Image (cartoon, rainbow, N blue to C red; front, top):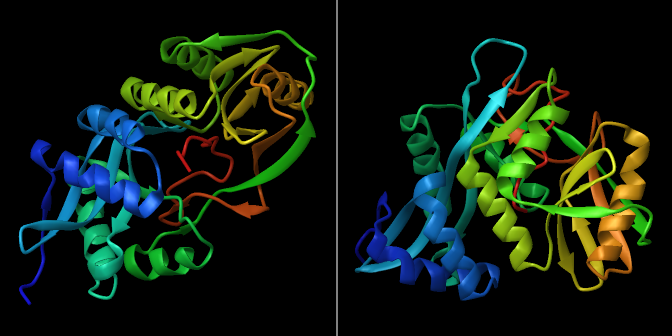
Length: 271
């Protein structure tokens, strides 16, 4: 059997990539069409090819900056959606793709390489492969939905303005406008969107009768439960699960040790 080759993706690869994504992750083709339409503005991808067919891919989102109290905001390379067809998972394809994705991120001037491992054992795998480890944690909360406060849906531009204002003076991840627009479309595709409520903002999507909020930023932390309950009610959910940054708790973002401040507000990860 010929050896597979790895290269950067081309526009002509998108149909095969979309079907591979659907096969590996189960997401419908209209969702992958949204993603690949926006990918050139957010980053790129590398693909593995064998006998003229794509057998795997890894994506690099480079539309992020790590804003700290220092003057320079380094570019962040986020490795996303590493996928290999089931028949080719014993060839080291995932490892090769991930290494090349990290190299591509660095070529795109990323000073920080990060990812969100899908499963707990993968933190060790990424550590052995890229020298990255869990640097941020988050805590999970669950609440019943109720119409406690008025909720307003936001565009990506409006959300960015609110977010920058709320996070002024903090360490945080700043998405590019295209990346935040993809976040909006991601949430919208799954029944949610970007919202403002009381003193804060959040991203939300639906999973059955549960509202999932990955990012919730409020000027007053006591408002978080009311915001989550109100947004969940707007979306017709029974319960709302939301996450907040924490010093300990559930493992979250993996990156190079020392590259991300421990109090960094991250939240946007498309998991």
